[in-house]
Image 1 (cartoon, helix red, strand yellow):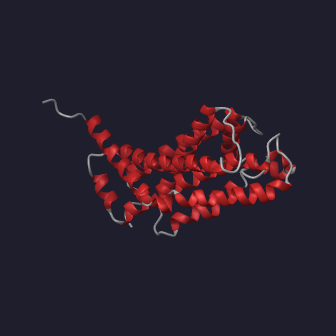
Image 2 (cartoon, one colour; image 1 turned 60 degrees about the horizontal axis):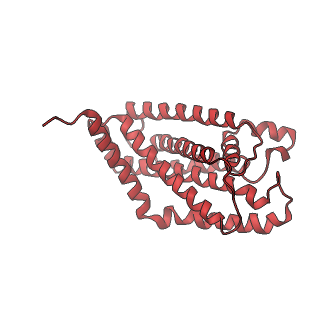
Image 3 (tube, one colour; image 1 turned 90 degrees about the horizontal axis):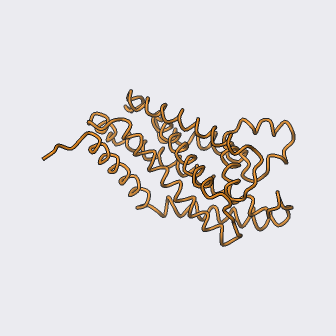
Length: 261
C-alpha cells in the first residue's frame, strides 16, 4: 500500500480543525447566529424605518436600502473576528494548542483551520442578515462577484485579526479590548450609516485612512451599484491587509508567541 503523503495528512488535519470550528459555533447557534439577526432587525426597525423615514434618499436609494450593505458587512466583520478570537483563546486556555504545535501538523494548517472557521461564521451571519433585511426592504445585488469577493476577503481579514488578538491575549478581557475600543469606533465611522460625501472636508479626510470605509463602500457598490470611493482601491487595500495579517499570524504561530499563559 502506498503511504499517505504529507499533503494528505495536512488536509485531514485542516478538515478536522475546520469541522471542529463549524461544530462549535453551530452547536451554540442561539449565542452565535441568532443574536446578530435580532440585533440587525432592531437596526432596520429603528434606523431604517423610524429614523430613515425622516431622511432624504441617498444616491437615489431610500435610507434603509442604503444602510443594509453596511449592516451586513458589519455583521460579517464582527462575527468573523469574534469567532476566531474566542475559539483560539479557549484553545490556549485549555492547553490543547500546545499539543497541536508539537504535533507534525504545520503552523500553516492550524492558521488556515482557524481562519476558515471564522470566515464561515462571518459569511453565514452575513447571509442571515441579508435574508432578514428582505422583510424590511428590497435589496438588489448589482455585482454579485463583488459582493462575494469583498464579503469573503473581509471575513478572512477580520478572522486573522481575531486570531492575532487571541495569540497576544493573556486574559479573557484582552480579547474584547480591540473590538470595543478599536473596531466598533472604526465601524461606526466607516460609512455604515452615511455617505462620506456628506461629511465636512476635515472629517472626510480623516475617514479616508479608515480601511473599514473602503470595505463597506466596495461592498455597497456590489449590492447597490453606487460608490463614493474607488472599488479597485478597496480590493487592493483589503488584499494588502490580508497578506500582512496572514504572514503576521503565521509567524506568531510558527514561533509559538503567546502560547504559554
